[in-house]
Length: 108
Image 1 (cartoon, rainbow, N blue to C red):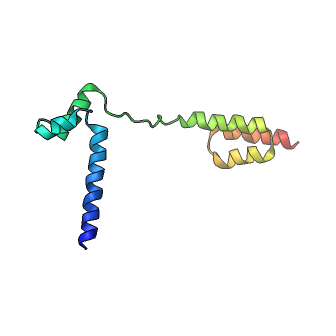
Image 2: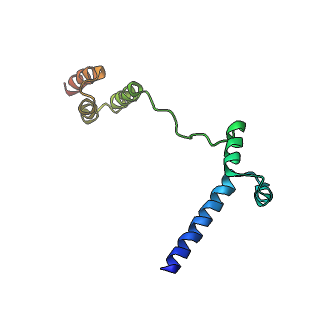
């Protein structure tokens, strides 16, 4: 039991040191040893400088554009199967009516 607790404590210390290395400035070891620096100050200084990590998630796409692209792809493929798939995926979309007309024209 004692070994398990020791391993957990070592993992926790390692994780904290990794976090500190990514958040704190390079000279923070010297400042931390003297007691002049705290984690809260480091985070606050990052926020002031605008160096906080920014989200890398792109903004959501416009759903209408995605449906339009899918319709254009179905028209380019020009097969019964591609048009039926588009109609099945977007039955209530206004482009589904165009796809149905294309399907009728294709099956003649």
